[in-house]
Length: 153
Image (cartoon, rainbow, N blue to C red):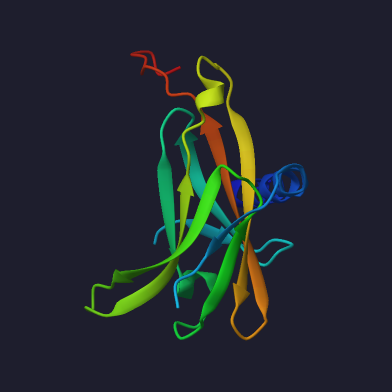
């Protein structure tokens, strides 16, 4: 079975459990090289590995989400309270302002001392000013950092 397909299946399965077990948090909007695959919600982004004890963020351009740059966001909702979504802009290499969704992942202080990794997924729902909605999933491995080994294991 191709590795790409396995990642997609794993993300969809994890997303189903993670989205129902997390409570929603909301962030109001102001007046890349990640793998993106199809999912039940439209898009799944593979964010790789996030360390348990470190804060991190992922910034996803509207274009990568299939959203027109002129779209106006009313609110962003995360399926997990450890992820805070927000609307941001960045300067493209062509010198133009471009919109994106930024996901801030909080450090998981409650997992200090853990020696186990977790496969997780977070669903972000976007509500637009015109009343339409769109969602996407971000899959990642939440792992404690470990010291590299000379043996490679």
